Image 1 (tube, rainbow, N blue to C red):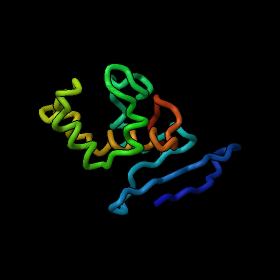
Image 2: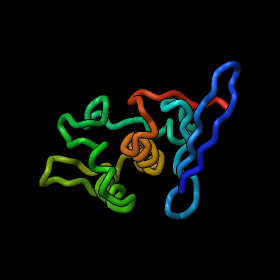
Image 3: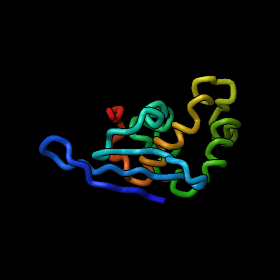
Image 4: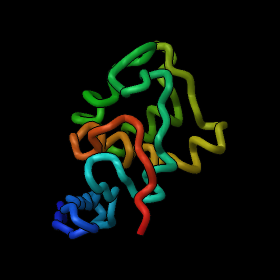
Length: 124
């Protein structure tokens, strides 16, 4: 489900997009392609997959998130894929506390709604 609106901000028009997950709850909100809600800002990470999330030591997350479910994403981050060189993050409190935010950020990047790898928090 997608909610999009045009909002006037000063003299410019800002495009705001809110994407909901399968549960109907907002997954992320992005304005102008790089201003994101506070929760999605907390998910702004993934250094093993490159600064642009397009692959480095690990594969491109921009491509991976087009095909895997949120459940598979969480399982992969939590349990790792040792056969492919990915460690488990199950003992990382920071990662596990922000797993939904990380998914939201990466899904927004994968969908093309978050257009810049470096984001800033949307001020409301």
